[in-house]
Image (cartoon, rainbow, N blue to C red; front, side, top):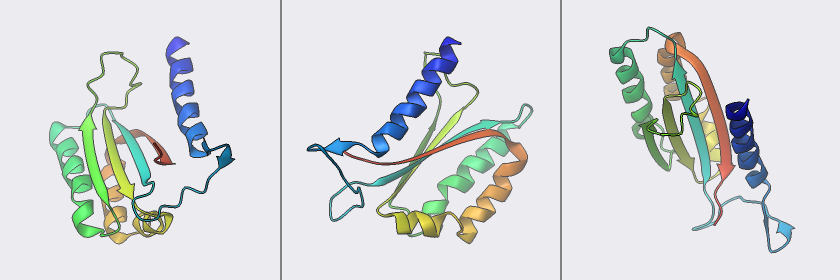
Length: 136
């Protein structure tokens, strides 16, 4: 119960940030110049029995997307190393950054992204995706 509540609060806080206020007014976070960036956070949990080789192939395929999709502004990824034991079976986190919603709109149906999904799907147990605009 406690873990579910904490995970729910975390997800809710991310969604609240999407409509954050600055100077008392809700802002459109469409970036201009050095403005906010659109983050696309993807968490994966793999099916039991997925081999380390298959997981490595998935990691490499995802990491290859920035070289194939120019709309990706930045990319990073890693595996869970938290000591809090709240990962709920998610082992991998990928962070794809875009400068604009139009860039994400190109990325999602892009052939390279769809080819990656085909590599991933047979091994995927669960996925969580959260998109948000950065602000400081």
